[in-house]
Image 1 (cartoon, rainbow, N blue to C red):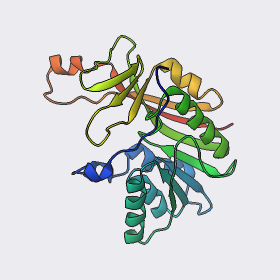
Image 2 (cartoon, helix red, strand yellow):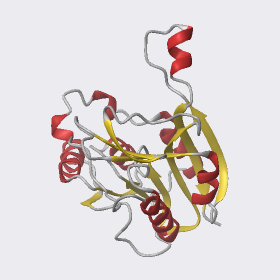
Image 3 (cartoon, one colour):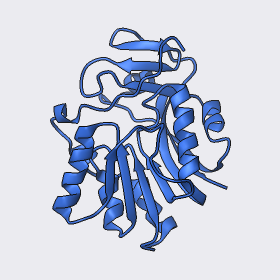
Image 4 (cartoon, rainbow, N blue to C red):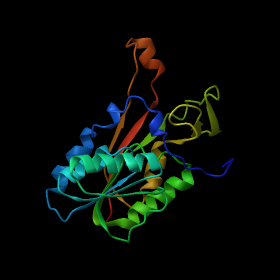
Length: 228
């Protein structure tokens, strides 16, 4: 690694349109069918952003806990919960240090979060999730990915190494992004049981063959793993 690993949060106050970050993700919502509606279920939203999944799980009657590195995100989540008349334990924190005892949670969700770090911090974050999950508990989240043949450009971002860059400017200014390959996924979750793995690519317009082909090779892994 060419420089010390960093963690940084989004500048949520600079995001004008937050509507896309206020709707819970569909696959996250479907986790309720696996969990059932037992009020004793404990859910942790690791990297909660402005609260879309924290609020959703609180609405289901679960015992919900959440954290984010951004104090603005934490305050936004608390405000949303208060307005909705819901309760959750929300605090500021890093993905590499979860302030809860071993074997606490039935589900940890970390959606578009743990890849905002260098590889050593991702490994540490995954180990922390493993620690706080109950045996049989579920970890659901996403990882950025790119083909090994796709290369970064330093034009807009700071390239740290062949899999890591730091965004320059905008709401993600200073935020690292790690792009996993398939073998990284199996390395990260070696201690878990891998139950579901989906690769998705999202293309921006114009939707013609040439433009879509130019965007191929960059996407996300959606993973669902279980602690043995």
